[in-house]
Image 1 (cartoon, rainbow, N blue to C red):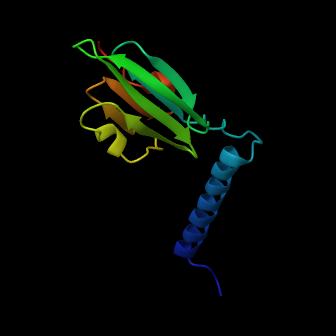
Image 2 (spheres, rainbow, N blue to C red):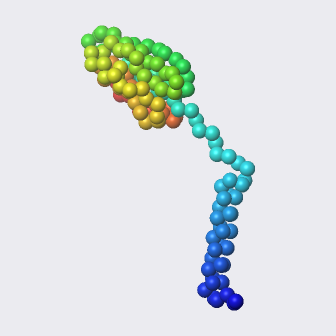
Image 3 (spheres, rainbow, N blue to C red):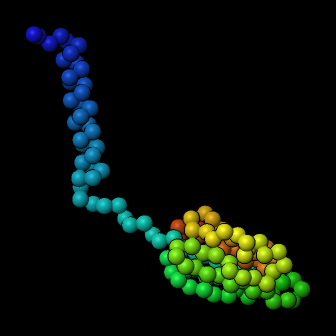
Length: 134
């Protein structure tokens, strides 16, 4: 049984697609190079009073941020980074929104304590954290 011209064209197109797919795979995976490892997520904590701290989300640390409000009264937020999450575990602010906020763990998430002017961001790179205006 002889191949018709359309059958030959179909076989040629199939082989060309197979070769192109193999070349693409070799270029992507066969060169022996690997993509750079992802940077660990960072936790950037800052306040309008100038407090600034950066920790890796994988760290296990607890610290207190102390701020002074417009009336000259001190405020405190206790921040805990553990088990790949960050959380405000206590605060002396009146509304407790920051304490009631669920722990965060994904890049782009943040916890804000507006009365104390504290912002905690999870970012891929420290420079991704928004700068606070005092």
